[in-house]
Amino acid sequence: MAEPADGPLSGGVKAPSRARIGWRTLRKDRYWLEPTLIVAGLSAWLLYGFVRVFMQDFYYVAEHHYLTPFYSPCTSTGCVEAAAHFGRFTPDHPLIPFAALSLPFLLLLRLTCYYYRKAYYRSFWMSPPACAVPDRHASYTGETRFPLILQNLHRYTFYIAVVIVLINTWDAILAFGGEDGFGVGLGNLVLLFNVVMLWLYTLSCHSCRHVFGGRLRHFSRHPVRYRWWTFVSKLNTRHMQYAWMSLGSLFLVDFYVMAVAAGWISDLRFF
Image 1 (cartoon, rainbow, N blue to C red):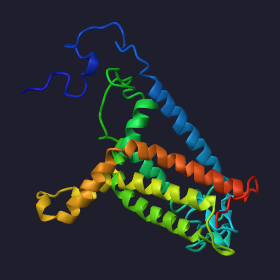
Image 2: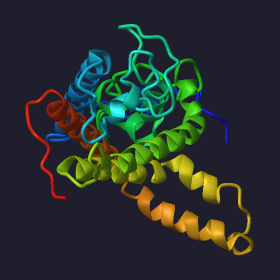
Image 3: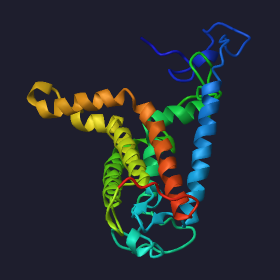
Image 4: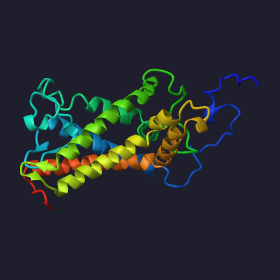
């Protein structure tokens, strides 16, 4: 079948063959509410994260070995020695985060994540803001041109994210051994909760699903990979929830560590 004269992607709701409707959309519900909440939520989180990353203080509780994920791995020469589990070798500068080796990749992972693409395309860019609501852009080229073609980096940032979550897991384990030996406090539970959320978000990623089941012609010949693909596929159905819950857990654990390190509160000890 021949393509229309104006091409396959340039028609849309304003194509000559479409009905002429005066209203932008016939939807009467509050379709704009979800994009608005997403803009508010992501903007607040990014602002908080930006401030905390460059604060370069109140990131480690020496007494209980609590290290916030915003500063892990802490590789700057300005890091507290006890918090630098993998050495101190990156420059100490106000404009260079203490966790300069991990934060860029984590940010890129979230930016290129399939769910977050949908979230900020619909909210910040209004492309489109909701189903049955026209795109505010005049043309559509997909993710075939710069800079959106860089979204393909997502599959590679996934592998780096797995390594970083393993480091966060190690940090949570080390936190059970404080200056007075083994102990359990509220901070340990918060750190563990954050690690669980990070693993759920990472393992529910579409790239993770492809790692286990992608390009397989016969699942019967790869029973182990099929079982893992089935498990990851179940997690993938809740990828959006895990994306937001992991953001919330990152805020929770960082704020808790900051509050304890700054002396605003004392860590509640159970053992």
